[in-house]
Each structure stands twice: as structure tokens, then as C-alpha cells.
Length: 350
Image (cartoon, rainbow, N blue to C red; front, side, top):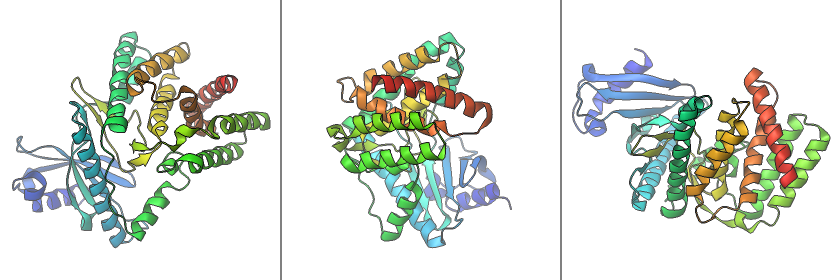
């Protein structure tokens, strides 16, 4: 039996808990969505009254069966905490998928399927379609409003209790990652972590020494002693244009496995970095498009100037340093060109 078939069998066996009613194996339809280290499937039943779910399966790999079960339980509790926090904010249309049930021994987490289309797709269409770009400006404002709700209005996420083993697994998943490694850090610890990442990556990418020196100086000047780095709020962990879905009525953020508490600049800067990376393909208007989309996003994410513009730019620059890495063909070449040009403009301002 293939993996999808085995999941359908398992779903039918636990269908009362998963769907709220008993469903025969023949009526369970499983469709693979992603089959990398994390297996993701759409799970539905022939009965249209049964909600469509997403099943995420954690593959053991180097993890023991006990570790897989513990990580699955922790992730379910984390998603529940995120869902409860955002629901408590009470803002219509600002959502995350509701976790339904976990089967820890199977490494399985079932969640409601989020409605909508990833913002990344609409941004890609907008690169060459003026009408879509105009619609994307409105989408950016809605994405900024969702993040404002999550970061500024929702209660702090109640993080699950973690065993020493779970803490070690979380630390291992974040170590060395230029985004995840900053979650939970504040003040001088955050400054030091960002500077260490920048220096390590610039050295590995063999960037010209003069540019390395100028970037290092700019990061030190901007980050050192920035009191705003002491602030903590709810963070998605990787608020990406691929992980935010919109409809006319809703904005839903997905893939919150790394959610927690951290600097309010992490999510906003990562989102803006990603917007720039998408619109860079319009070589004639990338700067203008990025600027207009950025203004729309910040008009709702930081309507009362909760985010310091100078510090936000430094966080965007931090993410752009990662795009200076060599390789990746045409995509890598254009990413490096955009990042380098953006960083040089930032140096002039910083």
C-alpha cells in the first residue's frame, strides 16, 4: 500500500475523531501536496458535509519514534495556542488554520484547510499586469493588518511546556537558520546573533572586503543600543508571501511550526524582503513596485509608527544578505543583483 493509501486507511480508522463522524475507507480521498522531509496531504471524504483537512506527517529520519511523537504533540499544542490567541483578538477575517487532532504515535497532525490563494501567486501575476499590481496594493494592506492583529492586539501565545528533549529538538531546528535562529531573542542577544549571521554569511559568500566592511559598520551602527530590540511580541517565525493566503473576506497565515515570541521586526521585515524578491523580475519597475507595496503593508502593520523605519530597514538588509550567496542560475543571479543594489542604497542611508 502506498503512503496516501495508508493514510486513507488510518483516517478511516480514526474518522469519528478526525471528521466528527464515521467514514468508510472507500469514502476517504487523500491527495499528496508536498512529499519532502515533511509530508503534507489533503484529506477529504466523499460526504460533502465533512470538512476538508490538511494532514502533516513528520518523517522520523534521524528522530526516534519517541521524539516524533513528542514533536507532534508539541506542534499540535503550539498551533492550538496560536489559534486561541488570534481568536481572542476577535478581528473578523484574520485567521490561522484550526488544529483538529494529533495522532502522535503516527507523527500526524490534522488541521482545517485554509481558504484562499498564496499572496506570492498574486504578486507574481502583478509583476507584469498593472491591474493585478493595483489589487496587490490592497492585499498588502490586508496582510499588514493581519500582522498588526497578531503582533499587537492578540494575547501572547501560550507556548506549550517542553521537555528537555523537545527543547533540544527546537534548538536544533533553529540553529544556523538565518530566520529561525532569531526567534525568542531580544536586546543584546539579538544584536549579537544578527551580526554573527551576517559576518558568517558574507565570509562564506566571498563578498568583496570593502563591501563586507561597509555592511558590518552599518549593521553595528544601526543595531547597537537600539532599545526597540528589547520589545517582544507574537511572531509567526517566517511570515512569508507563500504562507499567507487571501480571499475577499479573509487573510489566513499557515505553517506556524516556528511561531512564538520575538522581535516585532522579524515578521514585518521578512515579508517585505520576500515582496522585493518577487517583484525584482520586473527589471523596469521593481523599485517603484516594491516601494508602493511596502507603503501599503506598513500603513496597516505600523499605522501609529510602532516600527522604527531605520531599524526595519536593517532587518530587511539582514535578510537580503542571505541572497548574496552564489549559484542558483538565473534566479540566483537576479536575486544577488537586486540584493546588492538594495544593500548599497541602504548603506547610503544608514
